Length: 96
Image (cartoon, rainbow, N blue to C red; front, side, top):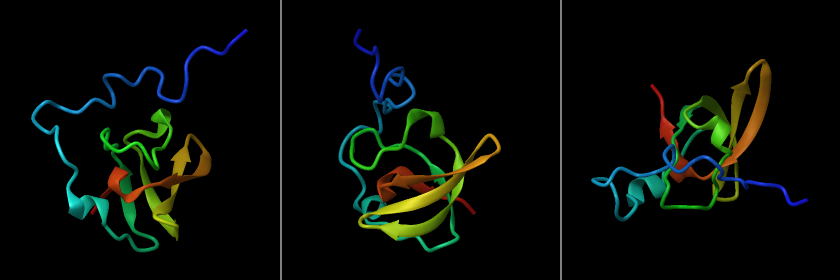
């Protein structure tokens, strides 16, 4: 039997862009640099598919551990566990 549902199952509304914000991605967000130990929020950019995290981590806050290629390793807390998620900078947002 084939497994129902893939990686983006049930995300139609969660990951949809508002009609006013549709269009090209901001180059500043795309080329953003993050330092080790900096706090970031996982906020998805639906128009860019590379470097996406799993939908269960949407909206969580984490700490940047290191850079891996173009992406960053972000340490997040999932319940009582610490997990490392590899995310492209376009899907990250600085937290004060």
